Image 1: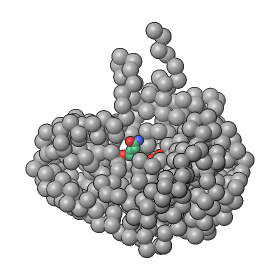
Image 2 (image 1 turned 120 degrees about the vertical axis):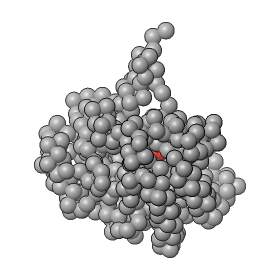
Image 3 (image 1 turned 180 degrees about the vertical axis):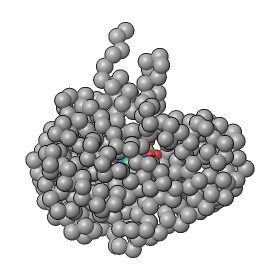
Length: 396
Ligand code: PMP
Ligand code: GLN
């Protein structure tokens, strides 16, 4: 049976095509399965172990009871598109038209896929930052565009401006940023965002920004690149309710962008999922309208969790790169004798009853040496779980 096809480019892009030509599951799926199989604490895949706000959960239940169970409109329910537009205005002073400049998607994942498949072609280059979230590389592979990476190096994981200038050329169609960044927890400095906007103008490129961790920021405020002068007209901003409302399984994401770009992305999106999650759409609208205190508390709670795990990792002997945002902390296992993060992570359940993810899963072969001993741990878990994990890691 002939098995060749675009799936190979997806798997190869995400570095999941094995030697025998088969696709492996993502590192997140692999590590969650390992946690289930070994009974270890799962600090691998990033998902919370507690539910989000009761009002949001109740709104979904209510919507199901009220019969909101059929196809929603293709661009998303008006109540959610209005809430997304109001959210952009309230938090960032960004004005978008909910009818023409907002698109609801099946999570940020579909937003990324539809955007890249709509806008990147075989002859285009797409710039991403490395380590990168796997979906970017997989979808660039499917689109047949060429991937160009800019490294983010420890300890700060900020891009070097000269490397950025060298990567963005007239061949660049899209510059994909992930701010705040997974897996490093970095927030791009404002002068970096300004340079990206400037380079996008110079080379007539578009900016795609994945901001799913926008509300999980610890020590500073989140500045969406679309709020910078000259950016909005060429920026596709992506977010999702999964992280902000601790509902990663609901898969309600969204895009805000100029109307012509939204139209182009809809042309693809309508044949990926068409629509999704009707009862969850009004529920996420309720979430987006929660008072400021909800968002502040969510960030502060996660910040405290970051500190517990980071302190535990330091005490266990890791070198910790304390993140500024998001669900994850990167720790260097070299002081513990590790030479290969993947091997270290495979052994960790037996050694310490903890699952984590090697950062090497997010970087290409040629850059592996720079990240060889770095490990990503999720801290979006209950405090008692993090405390127990820290105790266990103290024994490795
Ligand atoms: N982008 C980044 C950087 C992520 O970490 C994730 C998921 N954890 C996603 C996108 C996917 O978001 P969603 O679950 O809304 O599809
Ligand atoms: N974003 C989650 C993480 O980085 C994983 C989501 C997924 O499994 N695709 O852990």
